[in-house]
Image (cartoon, rainbow over all chains, first blue to last red):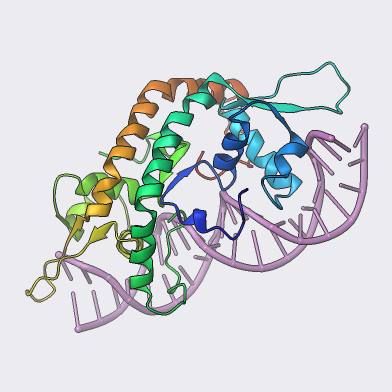
Length: 125
Length: 125
DNA sequence: CAGTATCCTGCTTGATACTG
DNA sequence: CAGTATCAAGCAGGATACTG
């Protein structure tokens, strides 16, 4: 899941920061623990995950239920607001499935060589 | 249009780079010239606009019809692919209208002071 | 008019090491 | 286990000046 080699970061539509979209998908089917999230998000550093989770929390998209337990167990889950994002995300995915090839073709055509063209690539593109 | 003071850059969903979404909206109703685009995109520099337009062009989202005229007139318009983005964008807008307040409330709650919290804010959030 | 060329700053991201 | 601290690099994006 979430192969870092996958060119999905070329998507012209993005949710939050680099990891936010993937995190939301991971939480789609229920609460997950910090370390559980690190598995599918291959190679994400603890810092990056923390940063992204805090941003999502701050925006009220996820919640971190307080457990009485020491600190050994922390879970994250989508809030109501977070779940409300799932539908727009599904629309994005549909768009991607339908038009991904066109976008890739356009890219290749614009850079006949295998090179990544020069800089000037806008971030999310 | 596109007031730079508008906190729309807090949107958790983004299209392309900082200006891409606005550019697409500007082209929604027909071709526009370079300088025409600069009006609604208040304060955008020529460089920023060029960069963003090139990225959109490279991805096949917009096209720049070649005119026989010298170079005095250049127009940009949405490609078929670009127009296909309008529907997902509309979904995003709907989401924003419905949930914007919730997101803002969550933000305020997380930073009782007027301060922008510390850094660590994920880019697009 | 429609850009290019340069310079420059700050955010984003990752690597690495450390902690309750 | 669930993070925090620190350092470092790279890119995004803006300001400014110049051009065919």
